[in-house]
Length: 136
Image 1: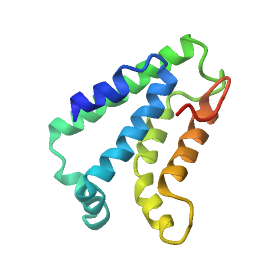
Image 2 (image 1 turned 45 degrees about the horizontal axis):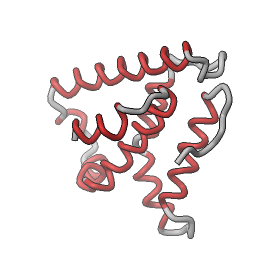
Image 3 (image 1 turned 180 degrees about the vertical axis):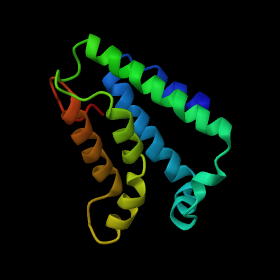
Image 4 (image 1 turned 120 degrees about the vertical axis):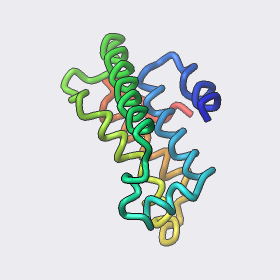
């Protein structure tokens, strides 16, 4: 997973696009590992099962996102008024979007991938200084 993450996310030059790719990677990981979604839905206290080492890893991940945001701000990729301290937590919430996307796919004719692209476009446009939309 780490090697795949580095190949799909770590090699992207733009920190803003790295953030979007990290979200896409999370969505793809849920698709590859449906048990993660099932555990999150069916085990209310699943966070109590997370080993302390993974909690520490999550803190490291927040630090990585903060560094990417600082880099994006320095490169002029972010709007000046974006609350960058909130972005890692917005990303954490967006990582759960696949559960909702699966539910809407049952009643909505738009393919899940198109809906995912729209979510990522909205995220990108919300923080980008010069939002261009989809880059895929």
